Length: 339
Image (cartoon, rainbow, N blue to C red; front, side, top):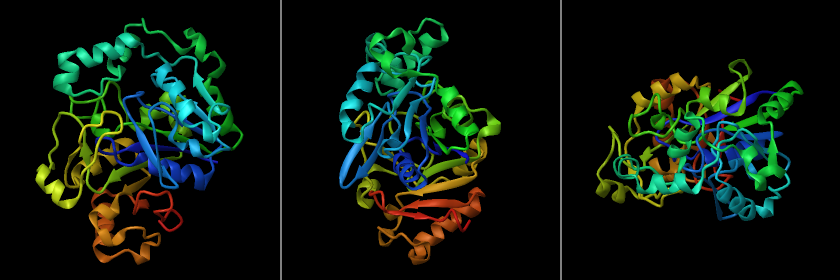
């Protein structure tokens, strides 16, 4: 069975959580591992009308048969970790989760610095979750690691070993990324970026997967890209236009209103190229064409929606395999068998 990586192609908030949730339930991976930065990224999914937002644990938690892992490259905030164990107790997460013993720890001092530093919080617009300062300490080789925190001991494991053992045994491994390509420390709109690279290559490294072991890279795009915080946004629309179109969203972590723009085909092509996309996923198609809401058969999409998908495929050069047409898990078109 293959390994599958899901990453964001824009500035985060692309709806990766809903795509990951669908793959977790439909494809039934034996391991779901989270890469990325840490608790400065929130993924949201709707299950039976209830919203679940996670910042630390894998978004595929609803797949009760899967082992849930947090890779060595991910920052861990023990406070958030234990809050989410409680938040997701109905899904028996506590008995299935493992944290790599090499994860660096977000301490209270990191959060305090992130929230009070005029440059980080004021100019860059960070979330205040402490990730940047914690990653700085890791680079300086003075960060605490998960193995140093007594309370985390029951959950510690070697994620890289578990993931590679699973691949050796033919199991399906789903790897989640965080943020989006435009926020990559290397490839994004520096300095208005996150504190590490979040492209597919780095997400693989976060959980200990070598490049030859990655079979599928799914890059997620939203029909109307959004951005939280400062930084360039070439296709941004006026807030009044977003209001008129009903495109009002708020960040999962910060609660700040998201800036909204038109789909950027040039950025999408570059993002797909650097991420090595084998497939695209498009979310919130119903925001682009309200007549597409809830449609689960590609052939039944209205003309406007279908032409938009075809334009993405033509200009980005990668097939669109998954399409979200609404917020619920079942609001999806799966074209993977036909592309």
